[in-house]
Structures are given as C-alpha cells and as structure tokens.
Amino acid sequence: MSEPNAVATAPSSWSTGTQSDRRSKIGIVGAGAVGSSLAYFCQIRGIAREIAIYDVAGDKVRAEAADLSHGAMFSPSTVVTGSDDVSILNGSDIVVITAGAKQKPGQPRLELAGANVDILRALTPKLLEAAPDAIYVLVTNPCDVLTSVFRELSGLPKERVMSSGTVLDTSRLRLRLAEEAGVSPTSVHAMIVGEHGDTEFPLWSIANIGTVPLVDWRGENGELAFPQEVREKIADEVMHAAYSVIAGKGATNYAIGMAGGSICQAILADHHAVMPVSTILDDYQGISGVALSVPSVVGRAGVLQQLPVPMSDGEIQQLKNSAEALKSSLNSLGF
Figure 1: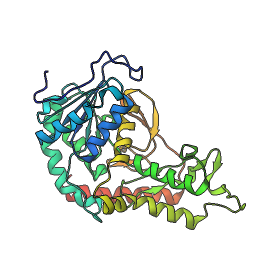
Figure 2 (figure 1 turned 90 degrees about the vertical axis):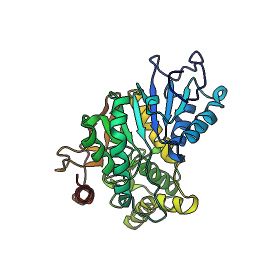
Figure 3 (figure 1 turned 30 degrees about the vertical axis):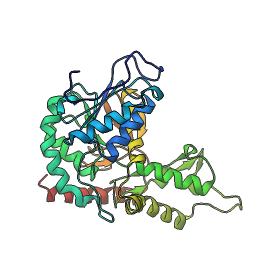
C-alpha cells in the first residue's frame, strides 16, 4: 500500500453501479465525530471510489478507518484509508476540512475563529502539496470566516473553495416547516442564507410548499399556517438548533456529516445542484470579498454560479448585516 500506516477495504472490483467509472477520491481532514460521520455517509452512499482520512492522531484515524472498513460487505465499492501522514490525501478530487477546535456549549461560532485560523494556516501548505487540483470544502466553524481565510492562504480560484455554509441550516428549516404543514420535507422549498451563525436568516420571499407560497399555506382549519410570528419562531429555533444539540450531547455530527457528504456527491456527480454553500461573493446584492451562503449551483468544477434570487429589501439588509459581521471578524484576525 502506497499510503503509510493506512487501513483499506473493499476491492475495487466490487461494484453496485452507484459510482462513476472514473476513480474518484474524497480526502477528509480530521477523524473526529464530524469527519467520521461524513466518511460513513459517503461510504454507504458510494459517493467515491476511495475515502482517505488524515489526522495527526495516528491511532485514532487508523481505528476509524478500520471500523468503517469492517462494513465492506454492506456498502458499495469503496476503499477506506486512514493515516497520520498527509500524503494519504494525494490525488484527492475533493478535500473536506473538518479539523478544528471544538465548539463549547453556548459558544458563538465566531469565537472559534482565532484557534481555527491558526490550525488552517499550518494545514494549508501541506494540503496544497498533497492535493493541488482538489476542490476544498470547509466544514470547520466558523466556516464562512475560514472559507475567506483559506481562499487567501491558498490562492485558489474562488469556485474551488467553499464551505458547507447553511446547507444543514436549510435542512433544519425544511424539517420544521414540514412538521408544521404536515408534509414531507422534500416537498418544502425554502432556504437559509447569510452567515452560518447568529446573523443567518430564511428567504421567506421565495419559500413554498409544492407550488404554494409559504405565506399562503393554510392548515386544516383553513387559517394561514405561517403568519409572521410563527415564521419568526421557527427561524429562531433553526438558528439555535446546533446549540441545543451541543448542550445535550457535546457536538453535532450526523446531520453535518450528511450535509457535507451531499455537497461531495453534487460535485463528483456533476449534479448542478442548487445549494446554499458559502463561497466568496463578487458584487452579489452589492456585497464583495466575503464568503456567505447564497443559492449556488454546485457541480464538478465547484461553485458554478451564484443565483440572483428575488429578495425583499429587508432580506437584502439582513444579508448585508451578515457580511458586516464576517468582515469585522476577518479584520480582527488580520485578513
């Protein structure tokens, strides 16, 4: 095996037809709860032919790779490797960065910025040497700040640097709206945009259930189901959802692993999927030079387009508020 101290499984001849013919590789930085959950999701979905996990904790990363490997007969044809040598990421099509300081209960994501910028500064040269042609997806918080930092440190084109942004927040929003309306979350079309954090907000202007505008949806009693006070309550629940999970179990990992894995799938399968990933804006609603989540088309080359969707004057102002919060954080970090 070319990668040192690695664990692998599943011969490449095993195939379920769920993967493309070209050999694809996802590199994951960090074998903690989020990185391992993301690897598990990608493995059972058959998103890539190879999943390589890098972590400085050698025993931990090899054990995680071995544990995943032991389920080889139950999953599609995927080779799983783990090592504390960064060369394990060589040739990755996508590198997902999950490593970083852990968010404490009640701690705002932006407070993590300093520690995680230092980690990213040390990692970036090693990652670029191992995977110079990869698309980079940041999951570590504060993901918007770190997206801007990594773009500057790496010098990569902006379409090849993104974070998971508000993809998970959007899933949480659709779940809550579906629960209130009594429909499947897949029938809800709504999106959280802005900062992945305390200034995020829903785009109520374009939200709908099926083809019915959300604000016009009526319950069984014939009354409007989503008046302003209900929408505000749901938005607040979504914004604080991570804090309640962290308070209860110490971390969020399963849903963010699925969100990150879904982004990887959209990239490798060239889905041209519309997702609220966070990447550097360039004159989007007058905002430039900062990474925020807006509806974006994601495919094999990364972020292909940022969609100019309708927004109310209030929503535009909320987006600008998000931008100002992130610019302030970046300035305090010297970026």
